[in-house]
Image (cartoon, rainbow, N blue to C red; front, side, top):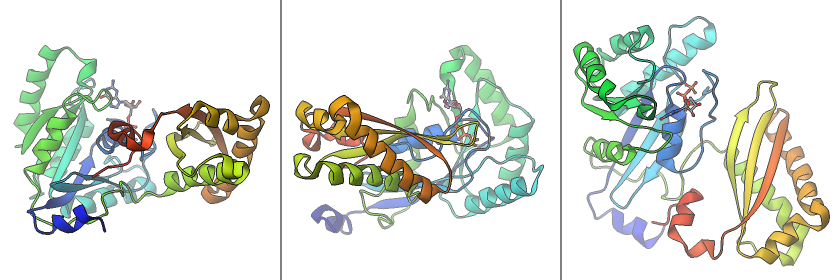
Length: 306
Ligand SMILES: Nc1nc2c(ncn2[C@@H]2O[C@H](COP(=O)(O)OP(=O)(O)OP(=O)(O)O)[C@@H](O)[C@H]2O)c(=O)[nH]1
């Protein structure tokens, strides 16, 4: 536990759980990823890719929010659909607030009405989060807000673009108003309990350290930038290897790219065994000078320096 973690007990630290709900494809994973600063949920253009409840943890000096990325609530058409509905509804009872995401470029439809009906029985404050505002004319927003307002009394209404990050900070501020005093549930540096991506990154890092021995210091970082299931069932993984100097970049790439190719080959074998599915692994090497000391860069990499 760091010094700062210890002193938090004395301050009035706030914490709580927040669910993100909405029809498939409205942008739940995108919002989650933007909030947390690292891609943790698998995003795709295809509806229904989020099979698990995924926790993302956002920690600041004063508060911690644990996000539950619930699978899209929808009218069940299959057993799987039924199960997903149940897990989403269960999650809603245990949270401080629920973010109901809608896609403003599609307008209010039957799917949204179906969810709103379910929300009516909840005591949990529900935010109407109007996503994808970058896709519509600003004038179109007010009439839409009025339409939703007629159907339900929302605790807050926040228009955002999860993709571009517009107004996402405001959303965060609004959420903190609903958090009770509470403990820091997770260490400040833990941003998800969805471990696959971290394990994949670690596997790549391990291969590099193994193959380069002393030439490459342990300070290299590997981040998974993209992870998604392709149409052919193969999991695409894009990973970036961060080094501090150009010379290190050269070493990792190797003569005619051979070292990097070997890293990819070995990491792919291990990751395939881990995930139990075929993967396509793409690796990039980037130089970020003195990255360990730069707060913004650390944030980009998904580390929290608090
Ligand atoms: N233009 C625009 N596109 C967005 C925005 N947010 C999300 N998208 C896109 O919408 C699509 C679906 O986004 P996801 O985040 O995967 O949606 P989801 O709600 O998690 O979907 P499920 O996992 O199927 O429930 C992706 O192609 C995103 O890039 C936004 O604010 N603006």
